[in-house]
Length: 309
Ligand SMILES: Nc1ncnc2c1ncn2[C@@H]1O[C@H](COP(=O)(O)OP(=O)(O)OP(=O)(O)O)[C@@H](O)[C@H]1O
Image (cartoon, rainbow, N blue to C red):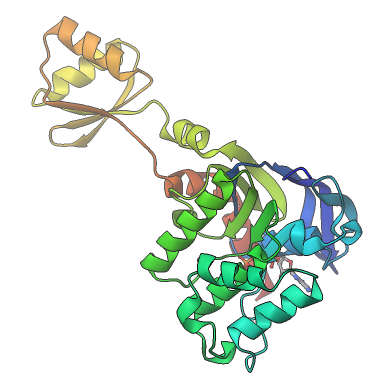
């Protein structure tokens, strides 16, 4: 079976609220795709529709080419954690996983394998009700891995975790993707995806804002700005403006240059005999790139929120 999720023209409304609006994207095998958007953007609704838990008003969501409801042995096709608290509190972690395995015709030995994979060994005999958020996330991940599925989907898996937990989940998802699986993880915080996702699907107000490789997004957001450090600020600004750049003073000895590559800045300054002590290309963080992309969506929500009050 192909390891993909294909979302095509998906739409969902709740009364007057358009939660998901003509949304299309593909989650490809072999990489971690981050599914990002501000609170209320429609991420959970989209994931519920992928899992057949909500009926779309339009469009489709396919797992390896098939809708969830037509999958035979679904746990072996897609593993998902949509709500880490969805375990009976009185149930012990190992019993919960055994019950899931049995109900889905999976061998009991797989339970111990996923307990190890999810780092749950020391807590497997404890009741889920006493679990910390981090342990509940691990139990949810263990359940998602039970059927060894080619497609994995996690809704906010690092939400509320400590840095160690975040690092652990990031590494686990990366290794699952490296095995050729398609991995989709949602987050409303871009910082949670820094270093963790290869590809990003960004949504706002239920609509697609960007569907891009992380590297390309960073390149686009970084622009062609160059930061220059020089004791001859005025001379440098005049020379670079003549060379066609847009320049602005960003500190007593610093100039921000737009419209010229670092190589051309160096050539222009050398040609005019203007010295400098430092030059660097501006590199946007993922957070900066995201803020730029979602500014409109957040503003709209702010206005809508004020109007509702
Ligand atoms: N069952 C429901 N009934 C009514 N409205 C809903 C329902 N589920 C979601 N919505 C609305 O649909 C929109 C999208 O919600 P959704 O939970 O999918 O967003 P999200 O991106 O997952 O947000 P968050 O990051 O806060 O989890 C919101 O306006 C939400 O209030």
